[in-house]
Length: 142
Image (cartoon, rainbow, N blue to C red; front, top):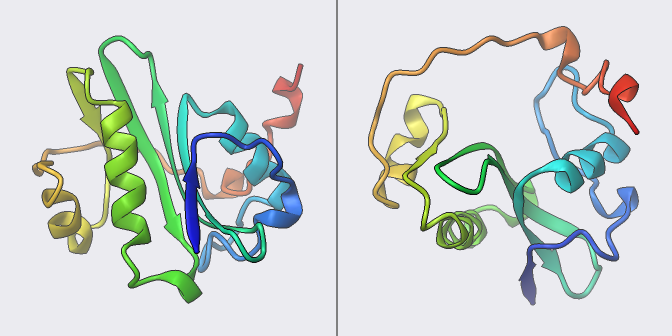
């Protein structure tokens, strides 16, 4: 059984194995937990049998006008079960009062996000792959 939560309570780095597949410099499980804890909004999908996170979505938001969804991931072993859809649906419900909710995605994901009423727009990005693991974030810990 999969349950959904908006809290990292009871989640440790050991519950976050297997994410960021194909990333050349993936964040460690410890950094992944820090990302979840620092995000404005999150939704986690947790396998009740193992207590492990099998999917997650994050949002950076001012809580007033806008939000950006930087990460949505479902473990490969759990894909195709509607978990990603449910994560996004729940997050968009939380963000429903905001004027704008943006994300950038690969073109092949357009139809998935279009199902939530999102539409294509032009985006500009910077990618510093040498910092993909979250390196450099430690000096900001407080």
